[in-house]
Amino acid sequence: MSNNSRSNLVVVGGGNMGAALVGGLLASSAVDPADVSIVEVAEARREQLVTMFPTVNIASEIPRCGAAVIAVKPHDVPAAVATAVSSGATRILSIAAGVTLSTLEAAAGEGVAVVRSMPNTPAMVRQGASAIAAGRHADDDDVAWAESILGSVGTVVRVSESQMDAVTGLAGSGPAYIFLVAEALIDAGVEAGLERPTADALVRQLLVGSAALLSQGEPPADLRAKVTSPGGTTAAGIAVLESHEVRAAFVDAVRAATERGRELGRG
Image 1 (cartoon, helix red, strand yellow):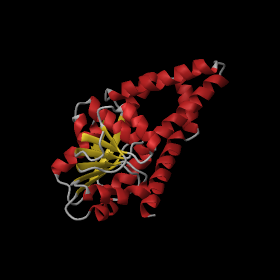
Image 2 (cartoon, one colour):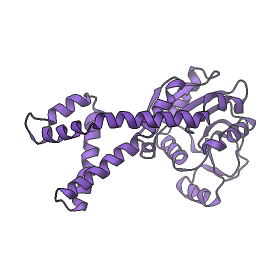
Image 3 (cartoon, helix red, strand yellow):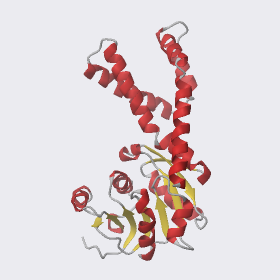
Image 4 (cartoon, helix red, strand yellow):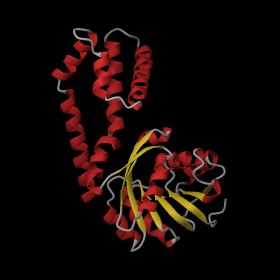
């Protein structure tokens, strides 16, 4: 398609997360494909995107637009924001980690509605957990617009910007913590005598099934108690985890990731 067409929404950056957002928007019929562009500077990736989204405009430069999602590397964000605004965008949603609202607003200029967000990688399978924080010029409609985009790929919560680093440390980095647990459980199953493919299959379904139970809303502590009979096998395992202060390890991990997010924001 032509790079000169006018699009209502431009996603700047066609990597995994940008593509996930477009996929979610199209699957939920939240947008007309004719009103969406993906801007990607890498030619090889553009070719992949054309195959993935044949009805969407794939461009190498930002076309005229009404709104833009910024999904590029953090150091490229100010230039991308400025170019999107010069191309007509009056709303900006950034999904770049560590880029503050003040940086976004400085690049966008006065009067442009800016929303900062922190999605996570499960957005790629439309099971993401995202948080958004509104800038000075973003009204309720602007925030609802941002929420609708991220809502197409999962759950969205509204927070103050001062909480965004904590969101990064918990939900942004959180998938890696879960994957580490999966690795450890698979290895533990092998150590206990299972074949690795068997342990792998059991752990994958263990996490999927447990997540499904959590999604029903029952408190995690109650779900744990239902599995943990006094003096039983689970109680023996839980006792070992508590003796190794697993809870404290997760607290420390989230704290470290949160602090690192603050450092990246400052730097």
